[in-house]
Image (cartoon, rainbow, N blue to C red):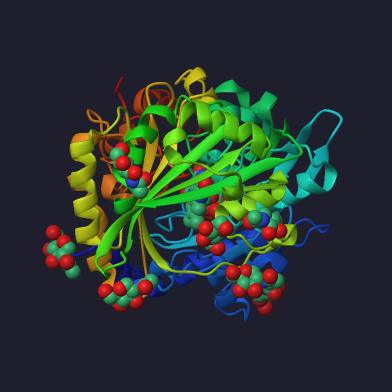
Length: 523
Ligand SMILES: Cc1cc2nc3c(=O)[nH]c(=O)nc-3n(C[C@H](O)[C@H](O)[C@H](O)COP(=O)(O)OP(=O)(O)OC[C@H]3O[C@@H](n4cnc5c(N)ncnc54)[C@H](O)[C@@H]3O)c2cc1C
Ligand SMILES: *[C@@H]1O[C@H](CO)[C@@H](O)[C@H](O)[C@H]1NC(C)=O
Ligand SMILES: *[C@@H]1O[C@H](CO)[C@@H](O)[C@H](O)[C@H]1NC(C)=O
Ligand SMILES: *[C@@H]1O[C@H](CO)[C@@H](O)[C@H](O)[C@H]1NC(C)=O
Ligand SMILES: *[C@@H]1O[C@H](CO)[C@@H](O)[C@H](O)[C@H]1NC(C)=O
Ligand SMILES: *[C@@H]1O[C@H](CO)[C@@H](O)[C@H](O)[C@H]1NC(C)=O
Ligand SMILES: *[C@@H]1O[C@H](CO)[C@@H](O)[C@H](O)[C@H]1NC(C)=O
Ligand SMILES: *[C@@H]1O[C@H](CO)[C@@H](O)[C@H](O)[C@H]1NC(C)=O
C-alpha cells in the first residue's frame, strides 16, 4: 500500500513545475494589495529568497514531515493587511493555503499539502496585551503558550490561563482546536475562557465577535480555525491562581503494585478536588533483573500548597502513598516548566520564551475512557505495552469543571461521562523505521478496543490522526469529512458543517481533516 506520504512526494515532484506560473501571478496579486505603511514584500519568501528554507523549516515540529514541505511561497505576515491580501489573492486563484502558528500539528497539516500550496506563517504576529483591571488579555495567534504564561507572570503571580502543557505550542492551533491543560478540572479548556476573537474571513474581511456572529465565534472555539478563516487573535479570561501551587511525580513499577494503584486511580482521578489534576502515564522500563517491566507515572498539579494537597490525597487517594518530600511547591509559571519536562532541577521562567525544541519523529493517537478498566484488563494492557516496548499511554483525567460544561457549549464534545482522555505516543529517531513505529501505535490502538469509547470510537481533534480518515476535498468531501468529523466532534459535527457552509461555501479554508461543506440538497 502506498502511504499518504509517498503519494505526497510523487505528487509534489510533478507539481513543482506546473505551479510556477500561478506563483508569479500570486506574488503579483500580493504586491498589488500592499499598503505603503506595511509593505508586504518583506513578508514574502519564495525559493529565490535566501531565507526560504530556514523559514520553511523553522516551525516544523515533527521530523516525519521535514522533507515533505515544499510550499512555493511562505508569507510571514507582519500585519493584518498581509493576511487579508493572502486570503483575497489565494481565494481568487483557488490556491491552497496552509495556516501555521506554532507548527505542532501532529500530522503536519499546517505546512504540508498534497497540492500546490503556500504557507501563511503567523509567528511574527504574537503580541500579548494584558489588562489586569478586567482580568482579560488579547493574544495574537502567533504567540506560543509559553509566551502567554510568561506575559501573565510578568503582570501577576496570582493569575494564569488554562494553557496546554507544552510551552512551544502555538495559540492558533491550541485554542482553535479546543486545547486543554492541567487546570482543566478547575477551569475547563482554553476555549471555555475566551470572550472575543478576531478573524479574517474568506472575503478578506477582519471580523470580531460582534461582526462574525455567535455561530462563527462558537465554531472557532474548538472546531479548528483552519476550516473557517484565519484567526488573528483571541481575547482570553485570565483566571485567578494561588501564589503557591504544588507539582509532584510518583512512579510505581509493576513490582510496586502499579496495577492496583492504577486501578484505584481510575476510581478517583475524575472525582477528586477540582484543584488536583493527576496525569497517569504508562510506559515500559528496564526492571531490576534487566527484564522489561511496566511503569506508572503519576504526574500532578495541585492549585494550592503541599499541606492542603497531602490532606486531599490522604482522604481520596492514600494508595499512592504521597509524601511531603515528593512535593515541589512553586509558582504557577514555574510549575508549567516542571510539569512539562519533569525535573527536580531549577525551572527558569525565561525558558518559557524559548521557541527552540528538541525534535523527534513521532506519531500520536487518542481515545476516551468512559469507565474503569478491570484489573484483568490492566494486566492485558501491561503485557501488550511490554511486547510493543516503545508506545506510552497518557491518561488525562476529566470530571470537575469539564463535566459541568454542556457538550454543545463549544465544538469540543467530550464533557460529562468521560473519565479520561488517552494519548498514544511513540517517538523515534531513525527515519527509515517510520512504518515500524507507526504500526506499534496502531497495534496498541487495536488492543485497546474493548476498554474505550465505542459507537463512535471518539478522538481529540487537537491530537490530529490521519488514520481516522482523510479528506481529498473532491466531490466526496462531505462523506469523507463525516468519517473523522463525527469522531472528533460527535453531535457538534452537524452544526460545524452548517456554519462552515454558510461562511465558506466554496470550501476555500480546507485541509486533510477540515470541516466539509454541505453537499447540495443534503440535510
Ligand atoms: C509537544 C506537544 C504537546 C502538546 N500538548 C498539548 C496540550 O497539552 N494540550 C492540547 O490541547 N494540545 C496539545 N498538543 C496538541 C496541540 O494543541 C495541537 O497540535 C495544536 O493544533 C497545535 O497548535 P499550533 O499552532 O502549534 O500548530 P499548527 O501546526 O501551527 O496548527 C495546527 C492547526 O491549526 C491551524 N491553525 C493554526 N493557526 C491558525 C490560525 N491562526 N487560524 C486558523 N487556523 C490556524 C493549522 O492550519 C492547523 O490545522 C500538543 C502538541 C505537541 C506537539
Ligand atoms: C524576496 O525576494 C524578493 C525579490 O527580490 C524581494 O522583493 C523580497 O523582499 C524578498 N523577501 C524577503 C523576506 O526579503
Ligand atoms: C502491594 O500490595 C500488597 C497487598 O495489598 C501489600 O502487602 C504490599 O506491601 C504492597 N507492596 C508495595 C511495594 O507497596
Ligand atoms: C535497558 O536494557 C537494555 C538491554 O535490555 C539496554 O540496552 C538499555 O541501555 C537499558 N536502558 C536503560 C535506560 O538502562
Ligand atoms: C526527584 O526527587 C525525588 C525525591 O528526592 C527522587 O526520588 C527522584 O528520583 C527525583 N527525580 C529526578 C528526575 O531527579
Ligand atoms: C522545586 O522547583 C524549584 C523551581 O524549579 C527548584 O528550584 C527546586 O529545586 C525544586 N525542589 C525540589 C524538591 O524538587
Ligand atoms: C532552548 O531549548 C533548546 C532545546 O531544549 C536548548 O537546546 C537551548 O539551549 C535553549 N535555549 C536557551 C537560550 O536556553
Ligand atoms: C506495518 O503494517 C502494515 C499493515 O499491517 C504491514 O503491511 C507492514 O509490513 C508493517 N510494517 C512494518 C515495518 O512492520
